[in-house]
Image (cartoon, rainbow, N blue to C red; front, side, top):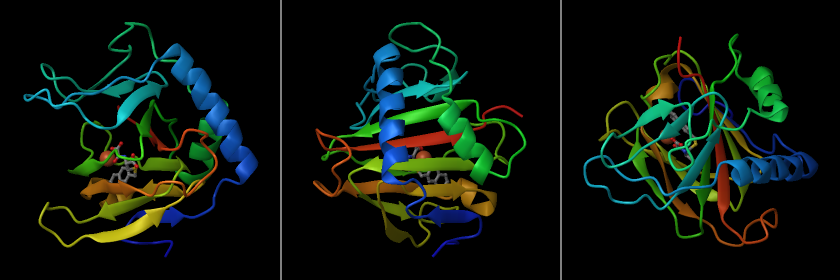
Length: 203
Ligand code: MD3
Ligand code: FE
């Protein structure tokens, strides 16, 4: 099912094992420079179960006081985010069909117990640019709906090496991660799942 909803393309097995391993190494380097942190929900301050960091000129962050936003520095270290690795630019150029490079790569790390509730991604100025999602490690149950929270949803599995390109109408669909399937990949020694989302933020 390459085309799920208008503009949502699933590319199963896009990355072979050696490219997955190379990306994990790249992400280890990013995390060494920009440690994973626990994001908090705006207003309540409730911690999210997913840990995050970023690379590229901008990073997506959230905290209790200031909420969801993009900023050029890490919230804990105050340092600029690490450079966007060439491997990620190559993937963007191959699948996005977009003429400008991504400004942010959000790195989501899921323990086997972590989840991400149903939400829309609309913190970007440039909503015409697609979002490119790369899955590494244990597989997960991904859910995608429509433009309203109450619309019917469709669930499918994302496995290590899969890409999803969210463009067109699909760009603003509600989506979330219902569960991680433990022990379904040997890529990450300590289990869990990594998702990378490449995004254009500004016009
Ligand atoms: C569908 N991440 O970081 S990526 C997120 O696997 C996020 O970590 C999930 O949702 C994850 O915001 C899902 C796939 C994804 C990303 C953006 C989308 C699916 C999307 C935007 C619109 C519709
Ligand atoms: Fe999202």
